[in-house]
Length: 241
Image 1 (cartoon, helix red, strand yellow):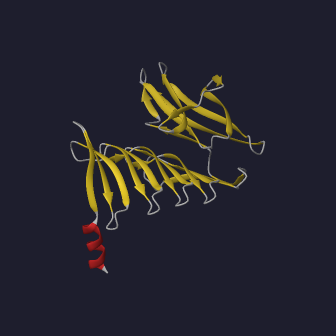
Image 2 (cartoon, one colour):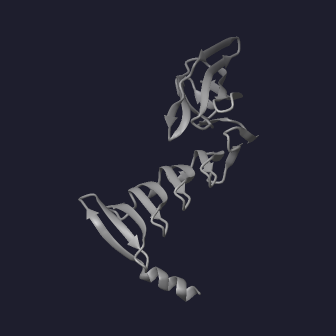
Image 3 (cartoon, one colour):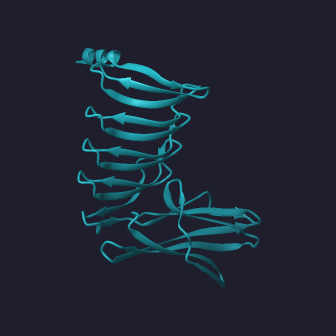
């Protein structure tokens, strides 16, 4: 059996279909002449650009994007029927942010959030019924990525608040800044696309020593069921001399 597997690999054929000064596009065929892969490499021999895998029925199995050898942006997987199976978002080769899973009928099945620590660091998950209603919720809907809770006076704090949810959710949000004896609330924050995920970037230069809290409050309306969800997160910021 081991010999048979190795023999199969040796019989796969690879050919260059296009070449320029920076890239080559290659195709790989199995021993029966079926196209299995089409991908692009740079002058260093690393995958760079779009990469495709194919089923034996010639339909696309996966579409990936590489940046200098590392998976980046969205990686889409399909069922043999051609319906979408998953949208996996990656940053510098690692899973990051909201990951979307679909059932064999093409309905959204689950969305789970992967933190920046590792591919398997799932912090929360939303399960959906076929009609788009939320079946189960484990964990928070809003997440925050930041460098440190402690900064020096005059430095700029940077936080990115990410929100889980499909396109048929309607989002409204507020950014909250808290300090002892002080309170500021910014309404109607725009959710911008950051790293292929729904996110809001907060940056602020702090010029006063003190303890602050930066909060993000989200209200979500499911347009398919007319039901709402809400969530919030507050991150402490300690400004020192």
